[in-house]
Amino acid sequence: MSPAAGFSLDQLMELAGLSVASALAAEYPVASHRRVLVLAGPGNNGGDGLVAARHLTHFGYAVSVCYPKPTDKPIFKGLVAQCAGLGLPFLAVESLTAGGAPPLGESADVVVDALFGFSFKGAPRPPFDALLQARLLRLLPEFAAVPCVGGFALRHAALPRALSSSVPPPQPPPPPTPSLPRSC
Image (spheres, one colour):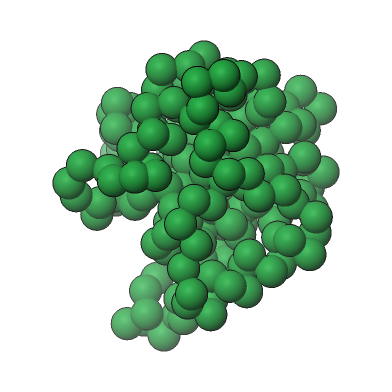
């Protein structure tokens, strides 16, 4: 699926965000992981995170969003308006990164990292550098990463305490053995 195949950007974000929300709900049930913090970046990955935040709210989660660098693009303004219309709190970066800020695990059961996609290059600049540093140095709640590269399974991305850059992609299943009947 891509714009070249006739899908619009907002359709792709909607599908990706719903997939993330569904995978998170399957891995982290609302009964035991109700509080979700979505870290949304300024690009399309952040848009996926905003869509996921909206769906997670509809699934019954208590969602907070940290969207440090909003963009003026209409699609993102619409996503922010949708989240705000549901009453989702938007947290300032400083509330998560200040020296006296509590560990993320005290305010969220799951953190969704939708800051940067797989094409991100270079060192993170402010305010993202402080947010990433705070995320890495503090006790984390369960952690789900949005980037899904080349068949990287969303369920695999939602493994507890996994950082997207340190989790090896899953290997494809072995091909079926020709001598055994296959289930349909």
